Length: 302
Image 1 (spheres, helix red, strand yellow):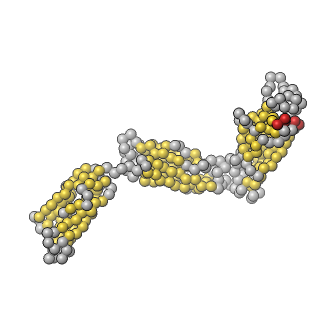
Image 2 (cartoon, rainbow, N blue to C red; image 1 turned 45 degrees about the vertical axis):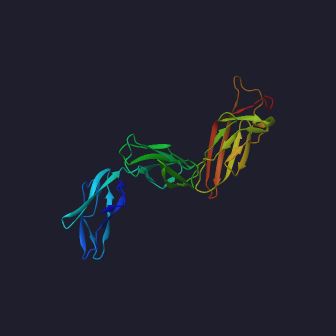
């Protein structure tokens, strides 16, 4: 009797061969055994056909340890081979999610599964995701466990796209794709950011522009947003419509501001910004920001 290998990894198989010293004149039944079935298992017997001198069989490695694989014929002739089974290397088996379609701005859960129990100290699995997802950078599988769950969410405004979650550990990885669903109603969202501060615009170019950016990229709608209608006012009101979500350096003139000087003790003037979005299905949504401000920056007589 021989084995293709005298060692195996738990969870795998090894091929064995029974060979007679001469071709069998009639079919021969060879009894197989294992000294430790918890380490490896074998079929109860293998038959060598008449005229043949050998036959193969399969040894299944179950768990780490050592066992002797034995073969006997006619109750007397026997042989044994020692097989050593080593632990199975821990790798990523899969990553799954509770729902493969998640609405934008919503939350869901995922699960990472290992091919074997996590080692002592646990297994820290690295997670990466597409631009439309927010998820932790790692998830810990406790020692002795084979899986762990994690939470993730989709970003507002990411509807209509898909993103991939990838789990990596010990040089192995697995991925799954999540579809981010568009919302059932339109929602306008935006932020105001200045050269150095949020919610702050500065008069620039001699009072001809506002040095700041209005960004509505997180707005969403059931259809494709086709227009962003901006208004911004202090004393005077200005309007600008864009087809893209970002308006940089909005045009103004000195009529935006009240006559100087600034109120006593003030360094800025309150700015109100509003937005209306429209999509190609006729949906409309509005948003307003009354917490922004304008710094005159010595323009327009200030």
